[in-house]
Image (cartoon, rainbow, N blue to C red; front, side, top):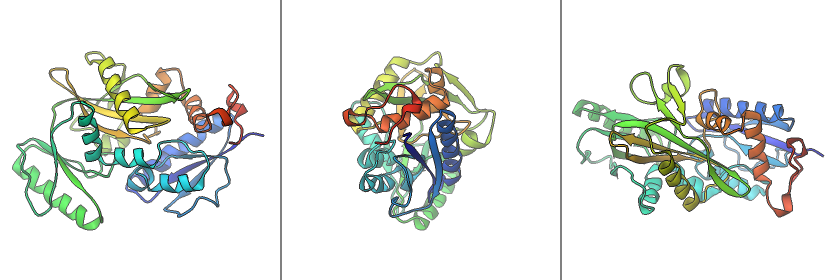
Length: 316
């Protein structure tokens, strides 16, 4: 009997629409691979018991869906699921906590501080102000001038008041080229996929450049960066945190060629613009194969052995 796969999308976070697009693409990929997959759009359920499936693929982006709360529910549910466990999800969603872990491992990361909304920023310009618990550049402010900083501070202050528990960080701005280093799990071991560089047509790689515009240039296996060193730091970070199945770790490469850790994403996007599917395709896993591989990874283990063919996926 072929195992049933439930793909979760939506969620209550600011990235809900992106999640719906990603989860729709993952569902199509699984179906194209010959698997029995169904998309379930959720909000913030306390239980997933009403969803009939043997394997769960949660394709949610943001604080609740990607930052540990949903993973706690998945752990209680007991069925195999794709992605990190709760602790790794929480650490990676919290940009400040992730930077501390990177620094502990000796991975270069820009100086940063928590923003106390009662104080002003104590850091020379230029710097970045951003929420610690959001993704997709939601709430990101680039501050080159005092006027930029004032506007960013007022916007962040309003965000903190509107979102209970919101934490804002200030980070020194590193001028350079953004690159992303995806990883997937094969045979129980994390493996680096080809590196991807990101060059927005103008400005920064913000939400518009990521999901709305078609003029951002993505280069798989770019020249002029130390790919081996970046992939090595990616794997060291991922293994130390306990990342499983897949992730994407972002860096900035400065003018001297040094790479600086930015953040880690435990459930990267799967939209038409997304980077993990591009890297996986270059690494020999087109979208249907990638999606089937992830579902298979969730069921891997001595007691959950699957056949080599995607169509041989069995209930776990």
